[in-house]
Length: 305
Image (cartoon, rainbow, N blue to C red; front, side, top):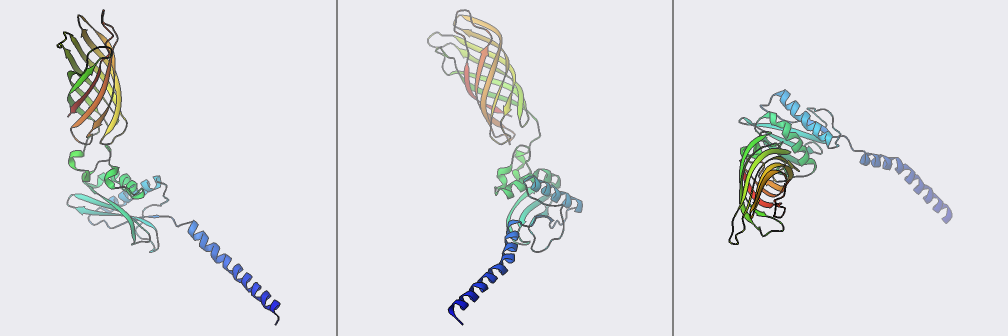
């Protein structure tokens, strides 16, 4: 057989092998591009009522769908090769330990998160946190806010939706275009606070004479509110309202209506007591007869409980 004939035979054989491999290659490509859907699996739940276990897993399934993961209704059994999100519930006295794990395949845990609940009803708050922590690979503690606190976050952090708080504080007063710098003052007040905002009232006083013989006094009773930018433990806020103001400077004094604006940050919102660091600007709707227009700026700290 000539060299040319051998070369043609080898070429035909190579083409045949390539054409034979195309279907298998296409099948492999299809399997890698289109993965199987995930499954919600009801895991072990000794001591937990069957309907509670089903509902708890259903809440997790709902949160998974909100995260863009395609899952069906909860099931009890799956194939060993399945990609599953398993919900396991365990009793610890009156408390419930819930564990969410991602297993691919079944039995091989790729990631998991767990929370200790005071009761099974807290699963309503726990399900979004477990899914968020698992999907985005976050620590479970980083998912807490004012509306989803559970037993594990410590009893001192548990809160009702709205709270009535008394406050007391101190501040320093500055008045532009005058020699009034860091004049001490105090405040006492009351507010009703929910996660997003509060409404309240304050009585504030600052002023007195100094070594230069300059007399200054400013007293206000105000009603207004504040808007909080998040519902976390630390939150910046803005606010404002109306006030009845009495002001005096040197030999002039007058009273009337005014307005105020505040900017600040509230700390320790998850606890019963909290602190505020606040900058406030008061603007009377009047001017003293022979004195500059008084527009006090105050910077202070207050304790709320």
